[in-house]
Amino acid sequence: MAFLQVNLMSTALMRTVPVNVILPVDKPEMPGQEKREEKPYKTLYLLHGVIGSYIDWVNGTRIQRFAEDNNLAVVMPAGENSFYVDHEGGAANYGEFVGKELVELTRRMFPLSRKREDTFIGGLSMGGYGALRNGLKYHDTFGFIVALSSAIITEEYNQRPYGLKGMFFETREFAEKCFGDLSKLTKSDKDPRYLVKELKKKNIIFPKIYMACGEDDFLFAKNNDFVEFLKENDIEVTYDIGPGAHEWDFWDAYIKRAIEWLPLEQAQAGLGSGNIGNK
Image: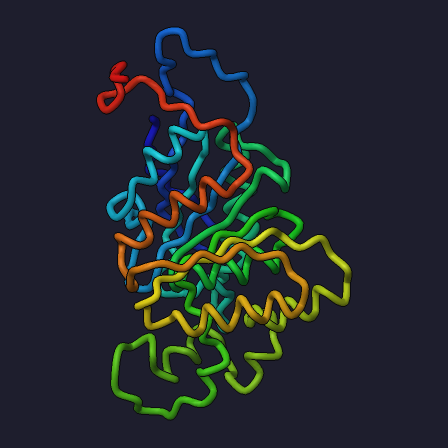
């Protein structure tokens, strides 16, 4: 399993951005195993949560193993605390970066499929919101969306007072830095509900959506509400719930389920230190 750290010059962000890439190009076949056809890899662009980084998914889950077993390329960019949207008043267009520029650059660099049906976006918490928002906004690029424990809280921000005590990402001041004028937020493409309604008018082919949330997660009710909204609007969604909170044990289990849900090649482990022929 090739694991690479790449530094990309982003014009959307006007700086160099670190990105981790899992690429199963060096996967050794087990004795007697049929050789994989040489073709571009299906790709999952995977986003971290708030206070996180581009190394989170590798440190917190078995994503390398899942990717290798399924011949899946995984691209994990640094998203800072941006909510993966374009910020006003500067070179901080995180939505454009993950939804457009990152895909274009990595397709030039690696043997990745250019087909919409082979290109997926996913994430957890802030990254789950980012996957929904950018998967919908860039629906011509992404055919599937994976959103775990998604921070779908845009409708709350305009109701929050200044000077609210708590974590920085709960404050109105932080939200204004990310989303701009909060009175306009729910009527902009930074709100997933607004995007769904506007895209329905255009009769687009919606990406297929997988969502999951733990029953003890503080975002559980928000995720339930958004799933119901999608169903009311006749948007195809698969929704899994189970024991767990806002934690890596849950995300490790459900990124595995999400990968099993994606239209991938038949799972087949390769030769490695953890698989040397045991039956």
